[in-house]
Length: 594
Ligand code: ASP
Image (tube, helix red, strand yellow):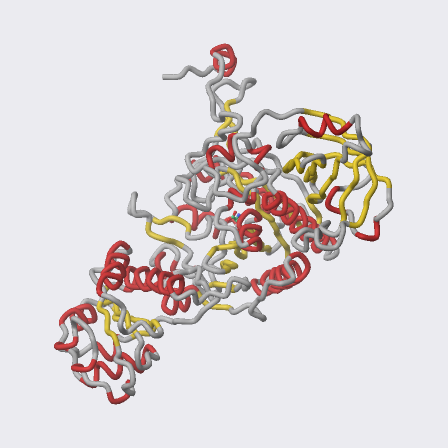
């Protein structure tokens, strides 16, 4: 080895020790005769002192060093004199007196400095990812990710799970996105699809008797990228035979509880993880991935509003809709401009409008009159309505009530967004908390806005909830699924379900999803075939690793958790992928670009 110890490992106890260090020049300072070099490697930084008196040959070498040069330093560890110690640095009590400095590699002036904690354009960071990853905050995330995955492997290994690899070149396994396809040279005109997930493969492993499977699996989904999506992502893919929903949830709760305690011990959890049905989550938080780090629940005001003289309310109820609202603490006097922003936010989520009602300070809401509240709707509301609204939302003196009236779906979406926004503005979410929760009993099918047909809310292989199968054809929209999500801090962390394991039921579901019998046979024949040879009841789940690391590290973007991610337009700026291929290659594949 060209080094005997990591730079960041040196402590007072090492004083007097001869060491050989190797790493990058983080910073160099010339102080008259003495040259100070902060030397950095994976383990951290240490100060190296090059004294012309004790290292006459190496002093001129040290004088040439520039940022990001790679050097080897041989020297002696010594305690820093009192007064020049640096308590902010793990190695701040010591320095290394250099006897020899050797340049191992030079560096051009880097496009950005590793030693500055400044915002760098993300495209530049990705273009020079190998420099970006030298930044200590990035190196920490890579290390955290390693520990997360290692913990998961050890945890599941101890519980008799087998890690099994499944193919990347396969056939379409739909998860609601487009497939990435790979042309076959040996079979011109035929294509592999990259798996959107190993879903069918893990089910086949259950048919194969594996019973407890997992894989740190790469999934490929060609979809329009959002802030927290990537064309390829990694998930802990997991499947178990002979289980019911609560068996899977108990395992996942234990896994995540012990994972957080081990790898991010400062983070708080809600224990046990709250469990909400999909309907409860939508009604109370306006979303199926609620941020439970704070309360501010949405209240149903329909009863209070049904006979209202305010037409916005009564008309919504008459046409089968709802009136719902929430109370934002201490915001009763919010300036008009800020209120208008909230109105715009509600409209952007599909609400026709937003009714706000500011409660005065110092007045007991139980004795409130319309004249006392600050609201464009005040003159249409009775004292009884104003009091009922305050009481149902739990609003106190000085609070702001935000009310949306209309169809249940858009009302939930708007209020969910308003709740998130108010939580953000008021800083209600404890940044140290990872508020895991389970949401279950999702619908089996959803309307596809484009085709008008039905799509799978989770995926096509999800078991209907007990007793719901008879309505699959007659009333698909009413059928609930035996499916579940793990959510945390407003993010979906995992989805899973108990699966169909019987051919007839699987075919019925696929037909509702619009597949013809021929397509069913062609695309799902392998799974349906396995169902005819004794496939056990089974279920599973798949937590996303990128997002998990993002939440645990307190980051905003999953790109910061991936060594070599793609941009939001699916480009890898370092390799310049995707890129053209030579005509010769296209010819071999029987392809022509038109
Ligand atoms: N295959 C599913 C997904 O990738 C997860 C699961 O149902 O286990 O979303």
